[in-house]
Image (cartoon, rainbow, N blue to C red):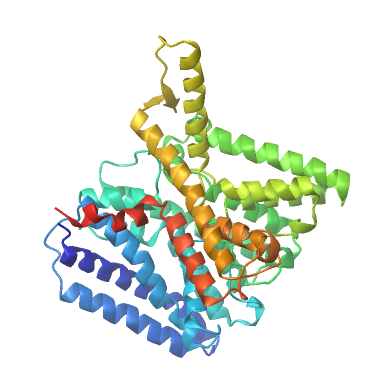
Length: 482
């Protein structure tokens, strides 16, 4: 039986954490005399009051169990986004509340798709809030909750895995809270280093903070309509490329590499090797194709091909060019990359490389068994045998991913979207990429989608960010029974 008091108490504490984080855009608004001071104060008060009431009138005498962990994760993302939409709504920056909710969910899920036609007219404090939602959602506000509070048991591990999912976890510490604290420490340090590097590149403080938050979280919100292309800086593009790539690496793997002071651990990791070589191969193919069809210079083409490959593969969604004008080959590659994320336990979305790696090795083992029925074959990742149960779970996840994508496309077409926009929009939402093709391409946005379509996209973003199972399990009747 679900102990709702325990769930509501944890939700209250998460809301209080987000309320404290709102001090950053509030200070920005006060310093810059933005008109967003009042909306931020109201939103902060709603977060604080709601969180305070939930904590004050509920019990926290019990440790969080697995079932409650799933419910906390799902509810926290929804409630945090519902309240977080208030600065957009109270400031009358978007036409209706549904668009505001879409924008906030796109932030917290690090999807990056926007309902704004022109982000350059927004006050700097609101730009900071947009990017902050991505930064909080990148590693997961629930992981921050686990790191800050000690009221976790088996549910703490459940919440951590719901945020940083994967069939083969890199263990950091025997204590769940210590693991969460280590992950957030790495995340914070990387963010600060990136801010400093971007400031050296000539960015303003607002631009540097916004792009650092959106880069390390692989979110993709920019302060300019032309995204990173607006800076026209080779230095900035290469710095962002490196940190997008880092954001796509498993954070537990980053920690183990730092702790061992040796790159061997990272190089020996199967998923990282595939991630690294896939990036190189795709970037090289696009580079050659662009040289043949566009020929904008070797170094400029190289930089563009590497940047866009990493941006798409990590589901960041930044752009330094409109790839819809590329040749059909490169354009198709960019679309296919929407269906591939980076590593497990990274900040990227979509179907992780580990899923494809596990599926490939399982298929190879199956072919071998067909040829040699008596042979004993195991599916191994990083030298460890992966159980049949885990393999089946990954294959079922892949099936669900594509089934839900097609269902989402059907629903979007019913909302008036064309075939291309409906399918690419559904894929962009569930993969948490945000940038698709057609009307939702690098130079497009979601401003013209009606309210029903916005709600469908919002639901897809949430399902994709929480890796499907965490959301769907809440709707299983057995979940609510003893």
